[in-house]
Image 1: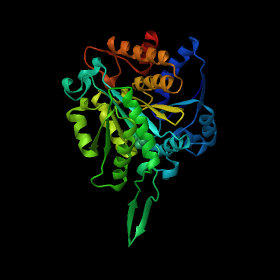
Image 2 (image 1 turned 90 degrees about the vertical axis):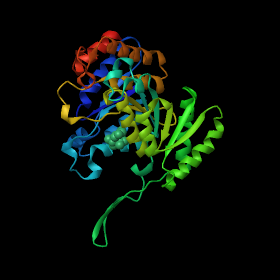
Image 3 (image 1 turned 45 degrees about the vertical axis):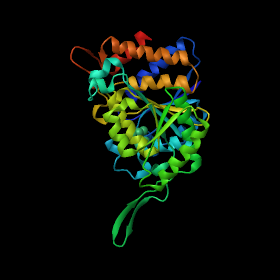
Image 4 (image 1 turned 60 degrees about the horizontal axis):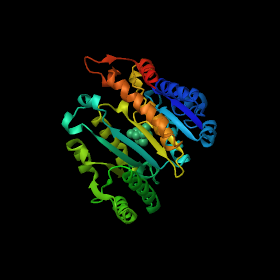
Length: 353
Ligand code: IPM
Ligand code: MG
């Protein structure tokens, strides 16, 4: 199992270092893992001038899975768009055809009181957001900023083909089948033609899944329902931009965005695994970032790309134990708990592994 490790920027190197310790521990227990590091994002721009250099493209193409920390930082925000770290992330998703982004939002019982919502609203929360990741307004052409009639106009194109909608719908229906059997598709069909097609194709695809209960929700209502009564959801499927927004919202239901892993998969389950949070430049290098989302991303990698369910559960159970033992990084800290830094959190996970 060849794993490319792209630590990236900001807190990326700190959190991936802890995830790599977990992988190394599993390796010494007999899992046949090979790790190789590469550059992506701002650190790649610093060294090569490109956010997704050719060497990294080769590395991730031959790897079976990719572990990614996070990319981006204020230092790069004034670069031309095509040189920005975020373009590296979008390019690697597109290059590897990682169209299916799975973002589970699970509330660990120990963290119920860390959520900004009332414990009774979030306790037991377990939802899965299936976000389409290689289409939509993120990639649509034409796009740009140009002069028209003496002033600048900015424009992007929201576009989905029925093939793109159908294949993500299949992923979502199949995920719902393994869970509680409920799927909510989120669109804005009252205003946008593109998402009218989305709804039509999801309804057509539903014919293959008569056992799944399918509902539809407009994205503004979905944003509201997520904070009003998040437990009404099981699986949510939506496009790239709505999924970006709703998954950040869902993450906060669980107390901290620092807890949530993600998987981005192609048709063969080759995947890129990353925490859903960003590079958090404000806390980078201070040993305070929460490495659990990245460690849980390793569990997703073992499950989805390598079919190593036992190893995945071992990691997830270790994380549960660490929380039960009271270890907390500052994002999930409450008085009475044991405040730890990034490395100590890694130590605690390894001790429980
Ligand atoms: C995410 C991030 C990215 C996105 C950015 C960094 C390009 O917000 O993975 O959710 O918008 O997809
Ligand atoms: Mg995002």
